[in-house]
Image 1 (cartoon, rainbow, N blue to C red):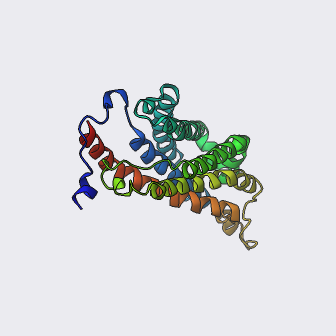
Image 2: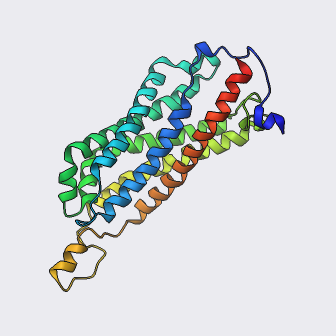
Image 3: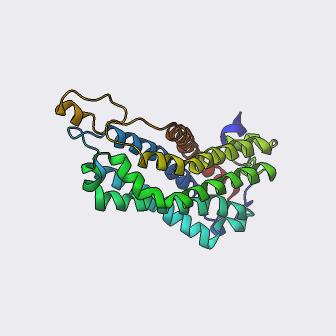
Length: 268
């Protein structure tokens, strides 16, 4: 039980001065970003004139998370800091995917900052955002395919396994396939959501005001239901996939602040 919470001690095993590791904050930001996207989409669909969506608040959210992932992802992609410790593949897995996601969120933040009023004034705000995002569909789907590739590589090569010196996760060191399957499944589910995202975006571009409401008897009731839409099935699937995996990534990233500190203490 002591090894579970503290890990094995191996002083001098890793020279941390040559291997800066910050995929902890990357995991936290990526998970929060996935959850934020789902919440943002929900807010867009619930937007009413009497209860408008705060585009400034969402611009700040995506700007903050996007900056973290863009900066850390770019640094990891260009410098490969994890290669010194024998984890060169992690620079691709965490660095490049974080960079892509970070740039997308940063772009969304700029859109909301510059065009927030135009979006909220549109008859259907979700349709307005979907039409703007549609040209990015190819890149989003490409990132999804990349994540599916990471899933396969993680299982085939049994990546992601924590050493016994890492608390909690290290208890599974004798069975590397356990953590490999867990992490690979997470990447894969996010990837499936990203591959389906272009179809969800396209479906939102085709919605019409009051699509899910019966014809209103008065102009007042018609105005109140103008932003009510039926959520396409493919969008629901993407939302569930990203919400669940986002929450898991937030929790796992938070846990890693403890486990990675323990790993550093045990191996420095």
